[in-house]
Image (tube, rainbow, N blue to C red; front, side):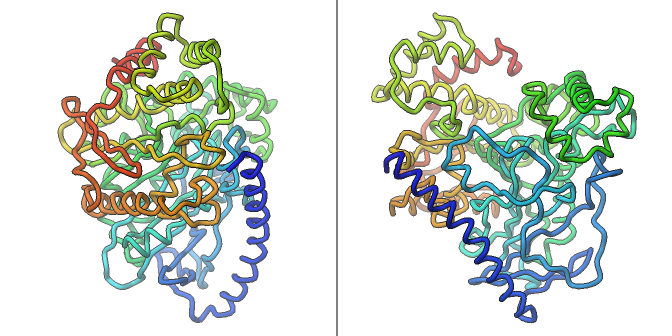
Length: 546
């Protein structure tokens, strides 16, 4: 497909998505008219009315916490207010306040949730094949991508119907606080009242896990068998949860796709960020309480001018994150030593970003891009390029840059987290590498960030999935294998399923990596010298501990 044709298809999809909202409204009216036939589930806080479609029950926009605005802003989540009538749960809730994403490939933008924003955003969504039937289906709680600053659990590619219907799990997606609302460290400026402010976005996820523990049995789920999983920022969230005392014990398995958490933001850096935001809003450092009264739109507007100074994420506050430098630095968290995990990345993650070159580049540009992107000198640049030319002899210059930049961004850290997890010797870490390229955009994207999500959710025919995966029938066998591996891991802690080679756990001695492609294979320590070179670079640059 040419780039122009790709844009035409995207425009077609955008029009379809817009039109589908109106159609969805009509369909919803019809469904509500048949409310007596709709599934109703009783939760601790009141009854919910959902939808039943093609063997799957869905319940959307369920409040698991109170509004986070006003006096609740920057504070730990509070329980939702119970209700007396049957509450409609047929539509997604509001997004958490955020700036709309920019800089992503257009194939991703069409899938993003554009619903209204509100601080009354603590909502979760459930898909299940049975309600109140006494069965104990494994629960999979998905944390959305978007770093710690954006995104939504209502992204159309996160629809859980196929995993519920075909693979017998209860799928949950979650919205929670983001950016300054979820990770603004105010303890040093505002005192004890704000002691948890730098991690309330993660405490929201803990609250969702607590809600699942108390209520998921009514939706056919097993509260004693919960897997938390996520991609990109979602992977960082689930690996952060592995180091949080409040979260550990509420989940039993972890899957981190193209995202891991190593170091947290220090209290000093967090305080500096908070002071800059307060100043941007025209307040004084001692006016922290007044931040709770500023309209959320004004806070969002103030984030853009801060640039890199507005970095948000979990804070090493000594309460919610206590030891080392963060979740997995310098070692894996012992709190979750007994929790098995899957983690991995894609071959050319970096093509997800619009700043990544997709068209041919010459030798001089390749050297300049590697030198600038990895912050290395001329000798190190030449060494890296030589290593990747040896490992990928068919790759042209632009693909070589994409491979090097991807490993620097994500793949090397995945290997490091897996190694540290395995070193605990208590539960396995299974590592994968997704390598099936997409034919869209003329094949220039290779295997970008987020591509595997459609395969994991078995959603190749979703409203926007073929925009990123293409339309060929050769996609289906791989989606079947990956979705079965993920759900079997959720059920048993073991991802091995028929059709895959034996998937051994990762260790420093046996660095086994499952390659997901048309022909899946297990490889020991792929591109080992390149991995070691980039790992050493990260230590020298202070990105990780030795």
